[in-house]
Image (cartoon, rainbow, N blue to C red; front, side):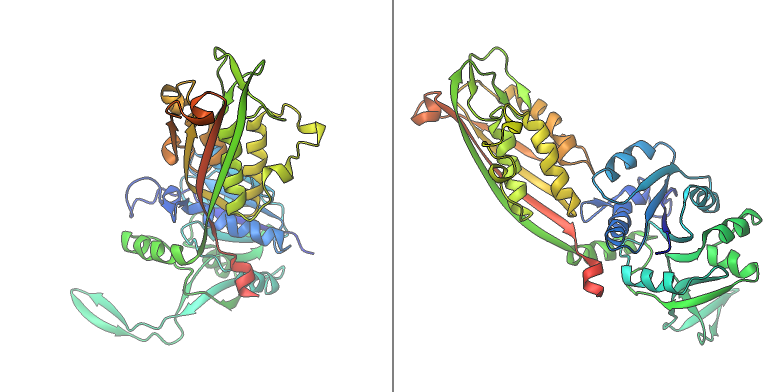
Length: 391
């Protein structure tokens, strides 16, 4: 198998669309660049490519690197240059593959099957690019006068574009600027193979493109809901842990094989259920001494990694804790700050989910401080399996 690098160019400022750099705007609740990276991860799992390199603006390297950790594909994130041309050169230096696919992060709806064809049509001296024939009537404006333009033979160029990496790096090293890699390649006398592109792989440049993309994104995602529930008795001689927080001054703790954190256990079962996985009792059985007194934050990290590995992300989480004591109202914000980096690595915003504390109203087991219960409802989504759809 030929080693193929996938280079995502995401270092621009996106000035024409306004606001924050467009590659970090959330499309379908996912950062725009992550759509292409998720497709790259899927292609890695299918043995189409071997690695991914991402060029981002200075100041975003650490943030993007953290968000790539749940994925299988070997990846590197680096600061791009002052122009797209500079970013491509820097990205090529970081790639190891014999062939490189160069893709704009502003094209989120990547078709992996086209990537297969591009690779198949790339040789040591011939590149391959996806193109679509121009179907609209064209006019040229000169001095406020319109003239018809013959569209015969005209094509729209898309990405990714595929080349022999070493040769492309040499060619780009001798050219200061270029509109795309194909232009530089052809300007050096090399040939290109034309692969039929995908109309859905349009580039988001203006606000109306973003509106169009938002509509498409909803149809490209799978949505699931899950519910989780847990209950543990309160007993003396145990520390109380709720939502990853310790309550050292409270005289009772939750009895359990692990630390008994009902909040984390309910959340974990909720997202496991939504993603079609077994519950925590199956994955972390009480019969296994390895999980004795386990820190539930570690359990949650493993559960989150499991669902992220399969492409799921958490869109929303609603948690209800039912406890007579301790009083939890003043601790809710801290719980969210503790749990948010694990549950929402794409956004890491505590306001991305809700935690509510209810009292037992001094009735029943909860009201008598015999136990604490927790219920969690989650909404998950993932980008649809474009590779499986193409097969």
